[in-house]
Image (cartoon, protein in one colour):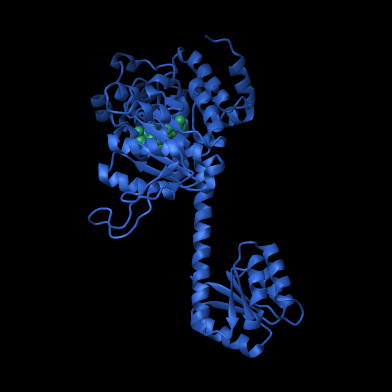
Length: 480
Ligand SMILES: Nc1ncnc2c1ncn2[C@@H]1O[C@H](COP(=O)(O)OP(=O)(O)OP(=O)(O)O)[C@@H](O)[C@H]1O
Ligand SMILES: [Mg+2]
């Protein structure tokens, strides 16, 4: 893609030669000989970069700069100035110009300045894009739950996000959302503009982990050809997420403890102490206290890390969250895959709600993803659940599979709540009548969704795809 450039200079000869040279370099050029013309062209064409002379007949270059910046604070402007005007150019940079170049310059010098400017512009745009998507992606609203304990955990995490000094320890089985919480805590607090660096402590050997975390000086060990900054230094003013903290060896435990006490680190092979402002969030799927009792984890480090802890319950202990989670993932895959899947048919839902979920929410997400890919109609059926997988990893009570469990309601609520049996919606699921036992479950489900949307009737009705009147009737109903 060609970059567009607006060249502003009242010296026609110079303007012409710059125009020619820069088009030759592959830029799409436009020119202006006065401040007014420059502003008009800028307004009309919105060039990627501007090359601006400071001396113009009708207006001071600085004024033009300020007007351009008022219209678009991000567009890069390079000031051209005679050598005697350098001081002014420095001022211009303070006013928001990207750079300046002293006349006379050769074209290589200029193209180099332009390339550098565009590259840095691109990097800034990318970082901003990542930041804004990270912020959206890691909003606390994306943690789906109606479980009171997890809701309290979210409230606490919101406070922890704002209060960014304390260390946080997150415990929970694999796939329960530890990383999701860590991200939300980082991206919703004052550290969000600085990096969140994640280190999986189980993935590296002791030596490698140490030099990854703390960096090393040149010659610290064979192969240390040059000095290297570690993850701690890279996370300065941000957050270091130490995943699988239960795996670090006693030597690394000591180093980490020292950092938590002094807020300083020492590179491997170094003597200097480096002061850092890093928040630590650690996570583990081990019972860390048991590790302490077994002598595998230092007690003092455990207490340092465990100033505040979040213990995320496994999915099988919060199976009432299943319908909400299913809806959440189905909605998001519907968007991503451009599908319009409504949910699981009743038999499939019964299987899912009786499963023990050893891989927790990650496993649920994967099963839904697979179901959505395989599913051809509106409803995902039993045959689209990886049964071999479920059979081999254990349904908590296989006898229960034939009757839908209370929580298994993702599709049923839509069908029942509006009095339409699910099998009449053009799906290919077996035409099973909705069991009466589901009535009370529907209310529980609807209440869960209602509480997820903090009592907002419109949003709840929208999420459930039912009318507000219908919602009101269900909420006021007295089924037990
Ligand atoms: N409450 C939730 N709402 C929505 N999505 C969730 C929830 N909990 C977890 N997830 C999703 O489940 C997946 C697994 O979560 P995450 O990676 O945070 O788990 P983890 O505890 O760090 O797992 P591991 O111990 O294996 O590293 C992610 O895609 C995450 O977004
Ligand atoms: Mg994780």
